[in-house]
Image (cartoon, rainbow, N blue to C red; front, side, top):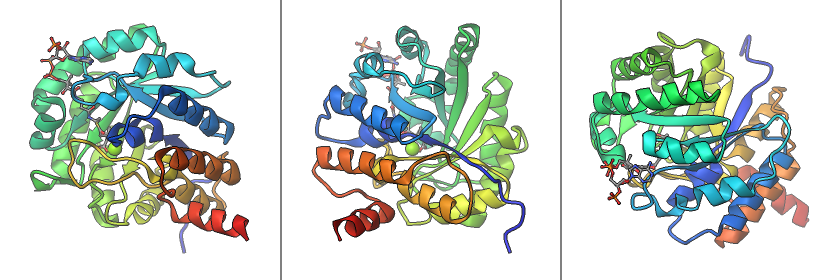
Length: 304
Ligand code: HMG
Ligand code: MG
């Protein structure tokens, strides 16, 4: 018997950013904007839109400002963007996001590969971003990559996660994501990473960001729910992956998370049918089927 599960969850759809950053083929800004519109129409209240990173490192996100300026913003919707340093923050500021996301890693090797600096250096780069964002009235989130496993170092100990969470807290980052970047986590390991994070952050300020590479993301979501975690990140149509984490596939599909929550009587505020349409839209634009079993089942059922 699962007792005392949260009665509602908040989902951040990271598809436009985490999902599309990994696409080799260029995706026109108009398609990205339409995707954001469809996500908000389906009831998403938080959308990670893009990142202000080096276009040499991630060419797909080079249209960041264009995408941000094309969005007809919905009432009560929070739009977030990734900003790894002050240069990224200064560009992002012009687009007036509601939240900026700095992104660090629990493993040294991944920090170097992804943002070209050590964990300690990353915190030095994030600190002025956090201060400037807070001064500008924006929220600040910290993504913590490789909290369970690293593509370069293997298993990552919970102590490394606690260390990073403590550093993030010390510079004023308001909430953090416990990310399983390469989707290797299983429920007990993810719970250990969550527990390490909870040494520094309150339950309300911790979210789960699970890639589904090994098919464990829903199990890891449930394991987090059991701890009272109620903020999760997912990606429409299961898009995603990190260009600096080889072999990492998409985030858990938003459609799959919403279906599971609905079945458990947990409120998401999201309309599953409209969500499936949004996933079908972007999948068609990319020339493939949605990477979500729920989406495929719903589409097959509709087709009769
Ligand atoms: P660097 O080369 O060390 O930066 O890159 P630098 O400060 O030495 O500058 C080098 C050049 O980059 C300069 O240009 C800068 O102006 C430019 P140049 O003089 O050569 O023409 N530059 C920038 N341009 C645009 N925007 C910026 C910026 N900063 C410098 N913000 C840097 C350091 C962080 C920029 C680079 O490593 C980078 O862009 N990394 C991004 C990697 C990335 O986006 N990864 C994917 C997102 S993280 C993720 O997916 C994981 C997550 O989903 C959670 C999970 O699943 O784990 C969040
Ligand atoms: Mg990710």
